[in-house]
Image 1 (cartoon, rainbow, N blue to C red):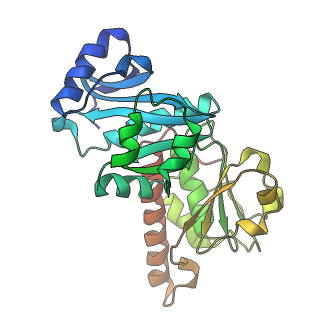
Image 2: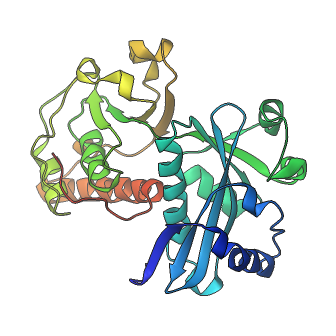
Amino acid sequence: MHPDLRLAPRTEAELDAVRGLLRDEGIDPTGLERGPGFILLLGEEVVGHIGIELVGQGTAVPQFLVIAPPYRGRGLTDLLARRIEDWARERRVTDLVIFALNEAGDRWASERGFHRIDPERIRARVEAYSLFGAPALESSRCWCRPVLHGLLFLGPENAGRSLLAEGIARAIAPPDLPVYSAGLAPAPIDPSTARALRELDLDPTGLHPKPPSEIPMSEINVVVSFDESRLNALPEAAEQRLHEIVWELPDPRRAPGDENFRFTAFRDARDEIRKRLDRWFGGIAYSKACP
């Protein structure tokens, strides 16, 4: 990101500039002022915007996303999306819904943990389409994901990938987001797990394998399971609304070969996990320390 770019709440003073950006991209700005939004500023120039509308029961719909052409391809969409999710989390919003207009939009949503839903589910929950309108339901694909209020990485042993994920997520996620990992049959931490985190200047002290029974599940609403669905192993799954995302990622602890080859597998797993979490959290660290 450009060092002089800053993110700020949109005020009435920036409405005309945002409308100009939207019109340049062929987007009708009608209704822009009816919902809150955030802008990207370079000096006093508005170079990006995202708006949001609360609809139905606890659902937030990002709106009017635009980035000025010279600043595209720099991760600014993720930065704006992260700010919207922070906004939604602060207000205890439960779900984010986005409309994808093309394959690139579908790919963006899928990579960030959204899942396709029938637009009729939204039509039934929303009485008036004040910002996005009924035509959006007919011309685009609808994607949904819970707002992250608490995140659990769940593996078979909590000695490798799930601990890597916890360590990285704690470094780049919002500081008020609960992040944990657990394993159904905890095993001793693999030394390569700690080594791989230290290569990122992350301190693994305090990360340790543990069973789900040690996790305050009341804080969790999203579970990332490795390899296969493990949600049924959690007693809380039947009592609270838990959304599961399955990451199919080779287990580096099972990699063949000598120590060097095996650690290469840990690096590969770590880097893939980091890439996925960067997409979720905008790729910009809130802090650098693991507890």
